[in-house]
Image (tube, rainbow, N blue to C red):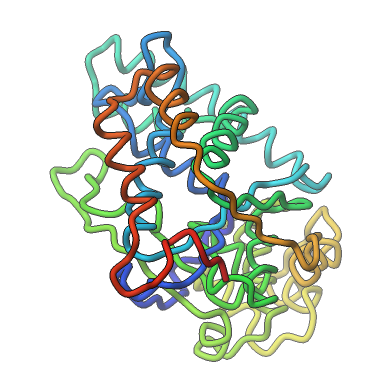
Length: 340
C-alpha cells in the first residue's frame, strides 16, 4: 500500500507525549490494516470470535485508541471514499496477491511451517465492507469523530491538517507526503518489538514524525519532483518502472523540469498519462471545510458490541473505556471534550 519511498525520508523518533493535546487525523483504513496484520495468532490467522468472525480490527480500535487518548491525543478517524478509476487496477492486483497468499498460508499451516504461515497471513489480510461498518459502529459508540473522505483517506486527512483542524496525519503510507500533508506521523497503530520474518531477530517499532516541507528541503526537491519519484517507484495509481528504486529515482529527477524529461533521461516510456497522476497528488479529490463532530460515548452500546456480540473480556473492555473517559490531570476538560 502506498509508494515505497521510505529510504529517502529522514524521520524523527518521538514519544507519544509529543502529541499530547493535539488532534491527529488517522488514516482509518490504513490503521485497520495494521491491526489486522499485527493482531494475529502464531499461525498467521487473525483474532476471531466464537463464531469465526475476524475481530483483530475492532480489538485494535478499542485498546490502541484508548492508549492514545490516555496519552492526551485526540484522534479523528478518516475513512476512504469510493476509489478513483485510476486505482482500480491496483486494487485488482492486490486481490490476486491476497488470494494467492491465503492458499500459501493454509498450505504452510498444514505443513507445520508457522513462520511461513504468519508471513503469508499478513499478505492474505483483507479489509471488507462488513469490517469497515463494524469499525464505524465501534467508533461511533465510543463517541470518537469520524470523517468520510471523498476518495483517498490520507488525502482527506492531509486536508484537515492543511486547514489546521488537525496537527498531523497518522498513516504508514508515504502517499500522504506526495499529497502534500504538512506533518505525518507513522507507527501510531502498532509499537513495540516486531519479529523479522525467518530471522531470530527483532526490531523496535516507535512512533516517528516527518514534515513534508523539511523533507523536500533536505532532498532539494519540489513537490512535483517528489511525485515523480513516487511515479517511478510505483504509486496506488500506476505501476513502477522495473529496476528503479528510490535512490535511483531521486537521481533521475534532480534538475528535471518535467516528467517527460525524467523518462527521456532514463530512456523509458510509460503507458499512462503522467499529468493525470500528478493531478491526483497535487490537487487530490477531497471535501473542503469538513466539520469534526464528537459525540458522547454510549458505554452500554460499546459493551454490548464488544462483550455480548464478540465475546471480549468485560474487565478489559471496561478498563479501556475508563481510559477514554478519564480526565487528564493537566486539562480541565476530558480528552474528548475539546477537538481542535
